[in-house]
Image 1 (tube, chains in turn red, purple):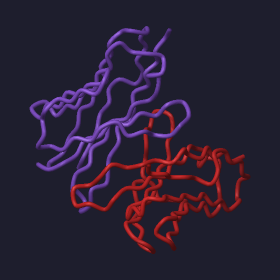
Image 2: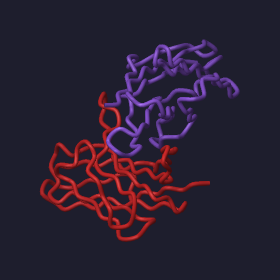
Image 3: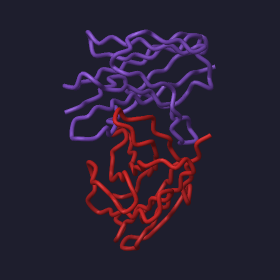
Image 4: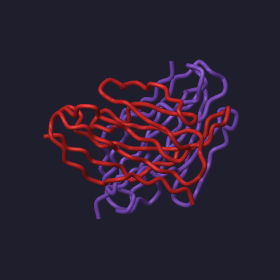
Length: 114
Length: 116
């Protein structure tokens, strides 16, 4: 079974703090994704990566950065957390196929910024 | 540009009722993929089905069935004899090659509440 793990289920941070959210997958997937989920807005793509050290902006990259130094690990960084970044953050991974493929999701990290 | 619309924000049913979740999509591509995911209260999205644009056969898996109609750009999901464990948010997603890569676009989700 594909396993995608996220470093924390719940996280509380203060405004201005630097926040790291870690995601690890064990299926050797090329693609990895970070989404945020807010009520009524569905899933919005922040960043994705199709290879080590490669990254592409999604729909809402402002205020976020990412790092992919190893194939299995994809980190989301909030350089200076703000209250409007309070949200549920979901990581996903998938194979890199020309026709696209099923995404496998982690359990999510519910981040609260005070 | 691709777009997925799930017009039903929330549906409430009583156990054993049948329920259909609607999904309408927009794409200019002839090759695309459609997905349904379930997000139970625990938060983790679980893959339910993937269907490519060339396969219009309906699919049934236990109490779940999917009706894909290209003529109306719809990919609806029906749960027969619903159960309390079906309570979740359900997301429909579309993946096509627009923009140069197959990055899925998700609908906003339909929250299904099944009462005992």
